[in-house]
Image (cartoon, rainbow, N blue to C red; front, side, top):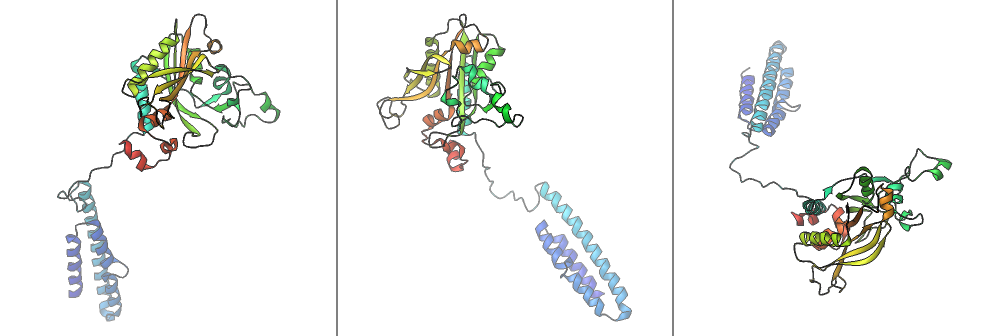
Length: 352
């Protein structure tokens, strides 16, 4: 009995002296585990004289129950202390650890800059669906039936299980779905639902069925712009886009327009800016021309106005589209668009 009391006091002392849950678990294993001291005591009881065995067994059971209760109480007390920051898991004398903070993705930062600049000019940012009908993505934007952009190698067509067999050949362009290849369909939707004057930008993701390389991705970000009012001309566009480029690149940047072709604008033009790397003198970035192409634009085609329900005799407007990824590459000097989508923290931390 004396030995049992001695073991009991020894274990209780260890339990009360423990100052962490991990330490308490070790004590519990050493004394109350399958190979602990209590188990050894039960083995000794089995070897005791028969007339003492019953009393000794009761005493060992009593000690075990008391110890299990004490362990449980001590464990609860230590958990409360740790939650309050007073346990051994928190040492106020140790130097603090600076938390690692994340930051906005470079594409998100550039998109935010673009939206803020145009909003200051009176443009409103709106959104549209990523999955579009062929009507909004091509037909309403004056794309001819034979236009190469409609082909499978450029466009991701959506499989529609609701149509089968011969029905597939009779689906109207308003029912046939594609992943939008540009953000221009939102222009049509907005002109259908709103009366001019209009001044909007449309930031969003677009999709192309093409092989990825340093300058191409299967999905990327665009920002579309549209302004419709009476008496709008190319001069209005050039003034706005020059102001935008100077604000975005924070300097006096040269801007020029080159004739081009887009089905949804007439006349159409590409917009170039003077190279910010060489200040227009010529370098490898601008192919020694001194100019870098940044966006496409033009005056809204009369057919597009008609398809949107507007009178092209009364209203005129311009539209433009720019690649957010391309602008980010120019601004930050990045030579591979795939870096934006790789999720490599070594790359992304450069923008913290």
